[in-house]
Amino acid sequence: MASMQPPDPNPAPVPAVDLRISIQGSEPEIWRRLLLPETATVPQFHEAIQRAFGWQDRHLYGIRGVDRHGTPRIIVGPDEAVEDSGAEPASGVVLFELLDAAGPAPELFEYEYDFGDSWTHTVELVGPAWVPEGTISCLEGANRGPVEDSGGPDGYRNLANVLANRRHPEFHDAATWFEQVTGERASAFDAGAFDRDAVNRDLGRLSLQLWPQPVTAAERNAVLRPILWFLENAAGEGLELTKDGYLKPALVRRTLEELGWHDEIMGKGNREINAMDVLNLRQRLLDWKLLRKRNGRLLLGAMGKRGLAEPDALWDYLLDVIGAPQHDAVKLMTRLAAHWLVQGSAPSYSLRHEVVIAALEASGFVNRSGDPIPEEWVWDLDRKVRESMDCLQLTDVSPRFRLRKEEPTVGGLKFLLQLQARLGDR
Image (cartoon, rainbow, N blue to C red; front, side, top):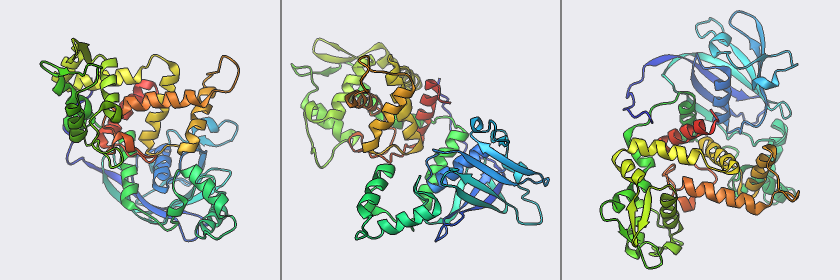
């Protein structure tokens, strides 16, 4: 069962380190100042840097320095990269081993990400600090993080200069590459941009991943809102359908209004065929046996009745049905979709199918004819998984207008983390 209890409004403070982290060779300097518990492991520290600078965690990383006892350390992660390197694995090493916050002299070490582009970060201890238990935060910083795979400081500096000048002869190629890699519009690129609030939202999501918290009743109800709303309206005598088996126009209109699923393009449609989010929700509730059809009406199924009375049981039931699809390919696509939502980032639309095909092929899926996996298979898999997840309010964005940069709510993130556990990703 999902753990439901009020969060601690005042978590106990724990010893922490105040670190200034800057990218060597960046002009102007790209830096962040982070507060982390001193018991954070090196892999957790690595993940904090990835979020704070906007890296995508696609490459190996390493740490070089002298620990608090004067011993030189070379640490590499992830652990499988250590073999035959002579370095020690990152797992199990904690920041407390590397830094003495009470020491008399400034301390620093180097963190390198992507041994090809060689993004070397200088990590300087500003001093000791205290943070609420299970939190990482950013105090300040400057400039956006570099673009992944842009060729190190010199390559990124050149890219930034080209994107800043639409008349540059390389602008078109650079802009096309930038948009494919990042999913962002090249016209909106700003090398000097830094949004501390956005960084802290990313670090807040990371903190929940590293130190999971129980789901509150309010978070649960917010995530389940579309489904609970439908079940509540189907209780009792049920919902009358049209002769073709669709919802009555008045209910379609009310569903769109009360769930906030209107948009300026589609308008206030009152037919299911013009309100695909409503159509999808009804069909999924039937597939999941939360609803059933009888004599031209939609009625609560046995699990629908239980879920309406026990939302905790409904939460666990949905984790089961979404996290244990019958087909392995759907399970893989669900794993990818959950990962992208947890990270708050997905491949650009133009690259998405390539990423999925590569994942399918790496997992042993093949076309029986021997031909490459067709793109239509990928779109069908993607659609099926999205239609399931769109029945939940995992983000603050309506299903139809979900963008590449999707930020789950706190409750949505907790659901996704539990879903990943069901999928075997944690």
